[in-house]
Length: 441
Image (cartoon, rainbow, N blue to C red; front, side, top):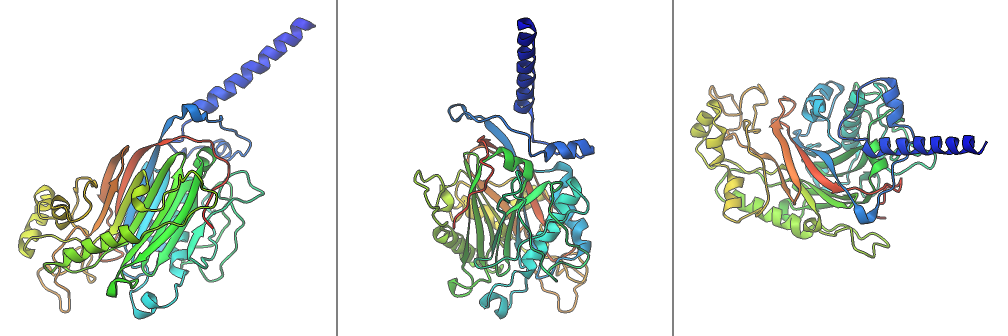
């Protein structure tokens, strides 16, 4: 009898050890698009991760997708889902999607000076959520987004009734859905959850994360800040929206910006000044009981920083010569005349920041009458603006431990800009989730 009990205890220990080994070695670097059993496994709230040992923290890989798109004041429609799918490059899925937009509303006196209207931000969030979760979740599970109130940012909190993070009680927004997009519940089959989003006039930033990673990592310190630096230095036609958050022990900052336009000599100085103003005036709110000061208050206090948007830097080259190099697809030669690169080299802006090699055509300005041609190309069209094509839409980063895996543009003809995206791999310190996302009040 004693021998039987001993064998039984040994069997239990073996099974427990085996289960812990499986948990330890499970990787979230890839998303399975497999069977229903896979779906159940990813969202099984009874699954427990091994406790992290603070004294023996491991570095884990996190794949971060950063995208920027000036949508020229146009509203999203259901038919745009194909373009968004291509832009997000879901064949090579990331852990976090950070999407910055410019001109999600026309820049008029009403939108620049008047009260913020969350309608278009909500519509874009719905389209993004549907695209992400149709691909790797349930085809009918479009996340429903809370109305954006007060400070005009969205934050996903935990529902007391759910063990999986970011599945919160949802409120339907009548009449808020883009044409062709139906409302639905964000349920246990949704793979990506909205962490935070914020709109300032036409600038909009939206951050999404895979739900199962919220179980594994402690996501904390989610805060937002906007800086208006347009007309007279303070209007919202130009400026930035920033989101700060910590994943595990690593502090991230994402800045979506829309800088001054113009290709006259000296316009680059205005853009440089706006960058310096965004650095100076971006201040994240303090978090209560943040005694150890782990959540930084400024952009440069973070470990990994990504700055992206319609930065509007142009080519220091005559129009006909620029178009000739574009026709020959000689991107290396064309980069020699890139205004942003020159300003970096001369110490005017973004000193010490990095950007990948640009191996794609300039993203601006495309003709509104025929999106396959740049504006101002021969034969000239009546009323068409003459603009030298340029790489206005850019993605830069700063921080140790960031590796860029890709940098490319998509071919959506939705606006006069082409969307741009970059995929990064970065190391973070692993930390056990507290099954809650902390944010500022």
